[in-house]
Length: 365
Image (cartoon, rainbow, N blue to C red; front, side):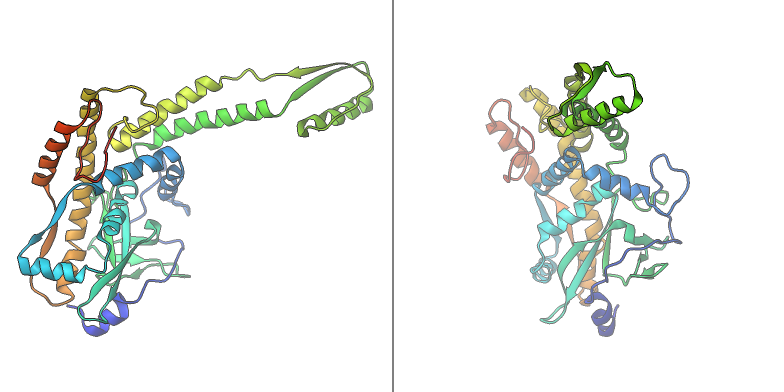
């Protein structure tokens, strides 16, 4: 049980901004295809690179949005629920769940909790997601933090960091990102994007060949230098040139775009479990929508239960422990309410549209 001095000095105070190399404890997850550690963390870097892709980021946001529309409730004794609701009243729970769901794409998502005890019980008033690369875990569950200017890690007091992890095991203590399986697809996609960019450069910069009667090298150099002005749209006057030939780029832009769309569809299916929300899906039926819907719902429910499992063993336990209050509450997915809502919305849905949420919006169209 932490004393008042521990609470005031460690939980209420924010961790400083940090960024540094680190060693010891569990090593960082090795990059895909990497077999040795390096100063650069390729695992987190690969995830950051993929999240810059609009298709990947949109699919991840869709997956989170679908989970946030699912119904849930606090389970526990009435007095315990009333106490938990009072302590958590100043905390935006939806934002907390959204931050916890980020463990889906990162595998390991550390959430820093700011506590306040100025008006009564110790209450969490702000939760902020921190960079995964700045934290470490040991085999006893202790969280370590890279302080500014330090070459090692400092232990973080219990209650300051919620280490949300997806599918964590002893072999993968930092969890597993959903983007690991997307990495090879994403790489192939971007090789074609690079080809499309090179093709665009050929189209935008006119290539011109001059058939010149001059034979001296210095004369040819003058002609070449003058022709270079065509790339910037300048006018040129040439002497000693018999004919100008413009070289056109006969590219495969439509084929490249089709390949990119194909891989966007594969990325969407891998992240969300369906493709009906993707721009690459042109046609669909209600039966196809229901099949995709069921796959997407299993993923959304699994993500929400992952977030609940992590929060139940940390934040919802801490609010009772730190306030020396007996009792316990847990976040629970409301399966009965979900099934009732799903049955009602699917019965009333128009042809070709499938609904499945607690009334907040569409999961897939």
